[in-house]
Length: 297
Image 1 (cartoon, rainbow, N blue to C red):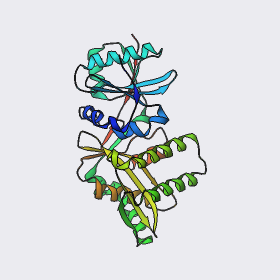
Image 2: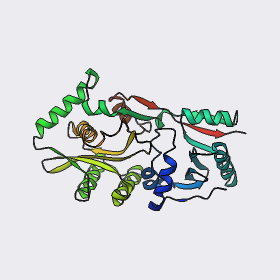
Image 3: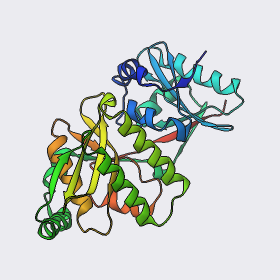
Image 4: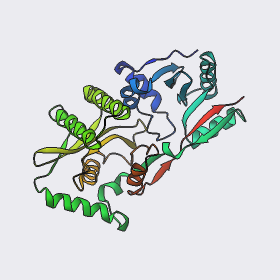
């Protein structure tokens, strides 16, 4: 039987031990992501044998992660099925990538229906390419950065630390003000950012910012996956009114902080056209498709 609880900082060690065996670069498969979104998504975790299992949502809108870890995968999926039945919901496993889909099809032939939504695909890029922005396709990005440096000759990059976190929070507030509204999604994201900053060092996150005319005009931050080859950028904020702010924080953060990794996962587009266009403009190396597996036995 699964015993779910809210994610606490004290869970980090055992969760990361399970995540080392995750067979995917899925952006959800990081401890920090599970920790900071606990309130927004009602995220809970369970330790089943040597597996981590996440559960999200409330009421009839409940979904689970694939079992992440090592051991009897089939038993872990069966535990999910039984838990869902016990609370009266259809067993739904979210974020099923190709490798896990094969495992499930072999173990549960015909018992799951798999549904895809491109809004939840991950955009994954080569660190080398994001560092150099080489090639004709990325010529426009290089031009935006050049113009930014001309317009702000005193610009500088800084690693995020306790001395400049408050400046990043103010930048995020200004970003919300530029949007002209403060809807529930913005509120939940801002709360997640604050929670990340409150436990920034304990979570082991990395971040960087761009300062121009003495002010922070862009920042980003995230955390490495336990596979050791991929970094997930969870948040990136910059003023849309400052040309080149997004490209320069992207490049400088990659150049200064991500050289130990092969890939950087810049997460999903959530079906937002502008966000999809922005992510595609960097020509991802991998578009990681994820589906939801619905139990139909």
